Image (tube, rainbow, N blue to C red; front, side, top):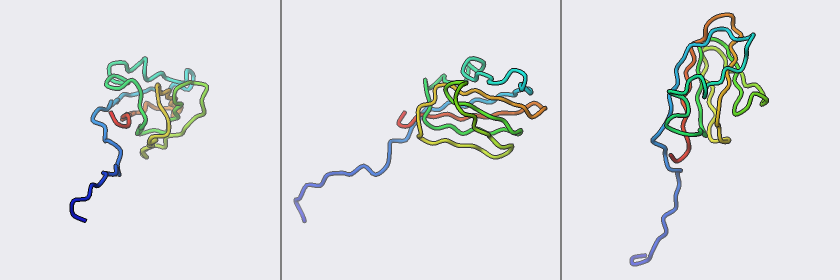
Length: 115
């Protein structure tokens, strides 16, 4: 086998180095749902990256989110349980509804595959 050429086979995707970390409090907004994270948290959200392929969302209250548009389906984020979406599609905005009756402490980590 000496002297033979071998081709390297890539076994893992390139890991990203950039991310956005967004932390904010959201009062009950059941009367005005779909809090626009990109517009209202512009200092943190979609700052290092224009879009995400992976997000992790945590909250101390049950909340719901919609991705990319307010017309998309609701995803429930249970209180105290992180919800993660990994490399399913491009995420360009996040809309949050807090109908818990209390203020929710929300944390979102966003990253993009290969960046």
